[in-house]
Amino acid sequence: MQLNLLKAKIHRATVTHAELHYEGSCAIDGRLLDISGIREYEQIHIYNVNNGMRFVTYAIRGEEGSGVISVNGAAAHCASPGDLVIICAYAAMDEAEAAKYKPTCVYVDRLNALTHTNHSMPKQAA
View 1 (cartoon, one colour):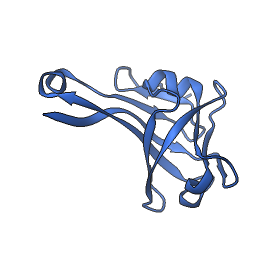
View 2: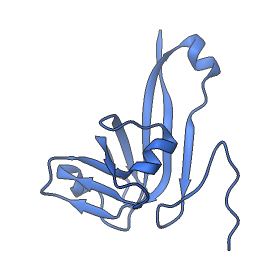
View 3: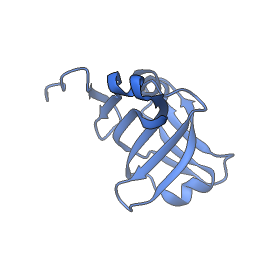
View 4: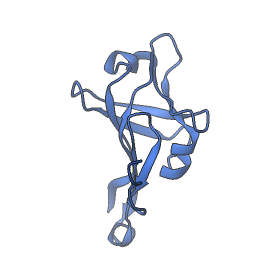
């Protein structure tokens, strides 16, 4: 049996752009993609904390360190700049893999700068 488990999560990122007239997808700061382990063109689920919308699209790489979270195409109807979103990727695993697996969770501040991961301690406030 295959189980579908959380692979990676970017928690409470702030939407910076909503581009309706774009091919589609969600542009995510390349640094956040690398830290989370979410690959470009990988299917992602986005959960909008502000309005409760949940939708599926795919990730594209945004400029490194830009903080960009751009919801594009038809999905732009589901999020507006300033909305908080949770971005998740899932992976299919067998029982043995699932028993040992731990997802990568990435936490960001209101500007989408990394604060910590589930593998690191939060940065201290300045």
